[in-house]
Length: 247
Length: 353
Ligand SMILES: Cc1ncc(C[n+]2csc(CCOP(=O)(O)OP(=O)(O)O)c2C)c(N)n1
Ligand code: SF4
Image 1 (cartoon, rainbow over the protein chains, first blue to last red):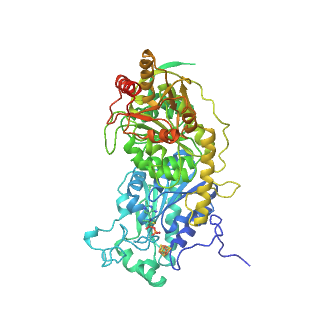
Image 2 (tube, rainbow over the protein chains, first blue to last red):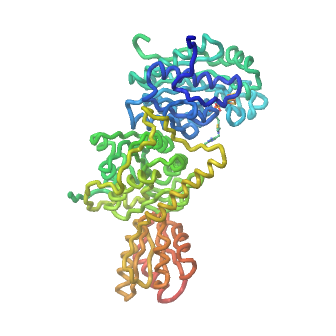
Image 3 (cartoon, chains in turn blue, brown):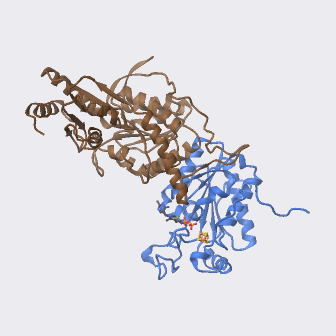
C-alpha cells in the first residue's frame, strides 16, 4: 500500500503535548517537512523559546538549544556566528518575541542576521495561563484584560509590518493556519524563508497566526473561525518583503 | 618569548586570541572598552569573529548560543553590564556551557562611577543570577596575570563545562605593565565537544537545555552540578602566600593585594613580620589555606576596595579564633598603603579593634 503521509524525519516520535485544536503542532510539522524536503536535517540547529513551545527540543529530531525568554534571536546569532555554514532557526511565541524579546528580534533583523524565525502569533500568553500579549487584539478578553483590551493597555503590535521596514530583512511573510489552503501557503512561506537563509540573503521571518482554544475559551473549530474572521482582519496575511529575483 | 608593555585590557584580549577565542560578543562600558576595541581589530585577522551586541542581555545570550555550538567564546563588561548578564550566566551554568566572562569592576551600586572597585565580589562568588550554581572566579593582580588567567579561564571552562569569570578591576584594566606573551599551552587535554549542537550527522540530536519540569529530575540535575562544584573546590583552589612564617596576615586579592604588599614592607621597617594571603581563585575560596595560618597569626587584615565583602569568607575560614580586621575603600577610591599601615600599627601596638 502506498504511504500517503508519514511523519517527517525531522520530528521525533514523541507525541506533542499541545492542547486539542492548538495549531502549534501543525506549525512544527510544516517546519519539519520543509527541513526534510530541503535536505537540511544534518546541518540545522533549532532554538526553542519560552512559552507553550518550550519543549520543541523534544519534538524536533534536530540539534536544539533552549533559550531564555525572548533571547532566542541572540542565541541563534551566537550559533550562526560560531557556525556560519549551518542553518539556524528560532521558534518563538508572541509573548516571547514581541514583548520580552522585542529588542533581540529587532536587532537580529537589523543586523540582517542570516537566520530564520518562526513566529507564532496566537495573540495571548498560552503557557502562563492566558494573559495579555503585545499582540492581543483591541477588546480581546484575557486574564489581565478581563474587560477586554483597551487603549490603556496600548495597541496591538504588527511585528511583520514593523520588521519589514528594516534593511537587514530579506524575507517576511504572515500566514494563517485556519484552512488547508492556508496551511499550504504557510508551508510555501516557511520553505522560502529557509531557502533565503540557505542562499545567505539575510534575515527571514514567517509569522503564523495560530490558535489558542484553551485560553481563548473557544472550541477548536470556533478558534479557527476566530483566526480567519477576526485575527486575520487585523493581521492580514501576505508577503511583506521578498528578495529580488524569481521566487 | 616576547615581553612587551601593554594595557591590562589589551593583554587579556591578546591572551584570548592566543587561547583560540573563536567568537566574542560584547557591549561597551568603561573601564573595559579596550577589550572589545582590541578584539574588533585583531580577532578577525586571527580568523575569529567579533560582534558588538545591542545590549549585555543579548551579548551573554549570544555567548550561550556560541558556547552550545562548541566554540570558544567570551564576553567582557563591568558591573552594570554584568548585572544584565546574570540571566544568561545562570542559564550557562545550568546548561553546563563553557564560556569566559570578564568583569573589570567599577564602583557601584547603580550607575556608580567608572573608577576601580572590588564591590562585585558577592555577585561573582555568591550567585548573582537565579538558582543554585557556581562560577569559577579568577582574580588577577597584574597585567601578566590578566594575560595568564584569561588563557587558564578558557581551559577551566572547557574542562569543567562551566562558565568562568575573570574578575579584574578598572585599575588593572587601564594600567600598563610589561607582560610576557607566553605561548598558549592548554592546562588540560582539550577534549572534543561531542555534546555540542553543530548539526546532527550520524547521531541522535544534541540538546542544550536547562528546563526540568519534573522536580525529581531537577533535583538530580542540581546534585550533578554540585558534585562537579565539589570536584572544582577540591582541585582548583589557587592562592599565593607571601611570607609563610609571618605573625600577622593580610588577606587581599587583585589590586588590593598589591597595596597590601607595600604595607607589609612598611611594617617590616617597624620590625613587624607580616605576610599576605592572596586568593587567586575567589571561588573556590582558599578557606583551608587561611585556616592553616590561624595558629601562627595574631590576626588577619582584609583589604578590599569595597565596603566589606570577601571579609565574610575570611571570617568563615578563621571561625572566630583570631580577630579579623577590615580596611575598605569604595566609590572608586584606591586605598593608600600609608593609611592601611597606620591603621594596622594602631591595631597591633594599641591592641584596639
Ligand atoms: C524571564 C521570564 N519571565 C517570565 C516567564 C514566564 N513565562 C513563561 S511562558 C510566558 C509567555 C509565553 O507566551 P508566548 O510567547 O505568547 O507563547 P505561548 O505560550 O502562547 O505559545 C511567560 C511570560 C519566564 N519563563 N521567564
Ligand atoms: S495553551 Fe494555547 S498555545 Fe498553549 S498548547 Fe494550549 S492551545 Fe496551544
